[in-house]
Image (cartoon, rainbow, N blue to C red; front, side, top):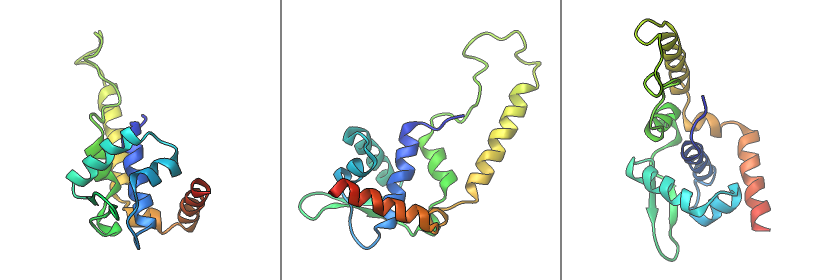
Length: 146
């Protein structure tokens, strides 16, 4: 199972904003730091704002910042909001002779549920509490500024 790029970007935007909680950060700054498309980032930021995870302001001095404390931002909730489907297999995509009589779909659903339960145990604060993570975010910020 692999998360979509938009989910990955959403988590990285939250981490970047969380590390820089003392100021507003810009989409251009984030796109440059992570070397990702500004257009993709716009979609992510728009959805994060609509979900209430970040706030944004436009114009001079504008940017984005966390709308909630990192302790209130659950990773499982963010992933669930960005992923269209968490199904590991799609038994309806192609005909399967075992459909309706196969234990595989149930086993994979249980594994997915265990994954999400484990992810639900983490918050953005847990990620930001790791000094190596915060140090690396500051490092990429300075690399992209120079």
